[in-house]
Length: 301
Image (cartoon, rainbow, N blue to C red; front, side, top):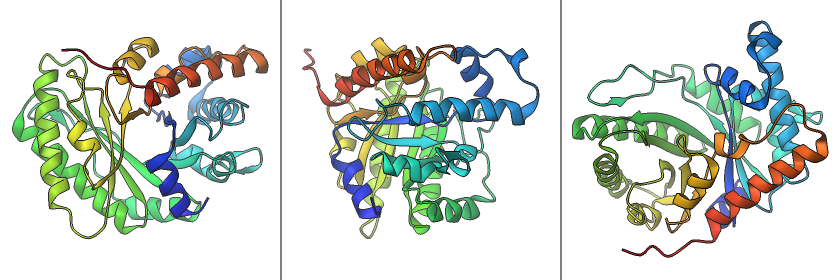
């Protein structure tokens, strides 16, 4: 797949995007969920080696292919590593899966009810390296905790600013202003966020498009205007802490939104499984998430 082919697959593909981008801070938790306790390794290098082995096992499983998984978001170390003796992005492309890279460096302390992204002074170099490896796009996360209009305006402005930098490097940005699903003001935050994103989309010039990765809204269908916007290539949803059955049930109520799940995709996988057991478990998760992404259910008032 070239860039045009990858654009078409993401825009029109009948599937979802796997999030395999746990970073340094969340890696111990991901490994523990996989059945590897912290006393099984010492130091970052061993830890990252184990998480890369887990991701390699996922990517090379028979059930993980472009039929239902149309894209995958990688951690920087995973992008720079190899799977089956090939650069990870190439291994994904050969399986029909479009590669993305997580570019944010974590979150600032909360201010005005939101957590902005930390500065990314080396972003241009990372984008150039990703482009050279065949990566299609990026993902950058910030978090909305409260329905604070000033804070949400700042978070959306920052997301679009980074998005423009990504577009200038020839890559597709996934803007991810996540609304905390445990927020006491979740529904109000969803609505403010939607309206703020629409303002920025309407102000875009040229032919550029962006992608959006959003928490599943408290009110089904709230993001329909974003799904339909001509500046949006695709809207994907994060599981946000929901277990897979609930995440899938909520996602299925939202037309045009497809999954980009991490924990909800991987929650049943264990290090000690045989390859057959591992693939069967992964395949069942893929089938369930694919169905929620593609077979929508009517929502009654």
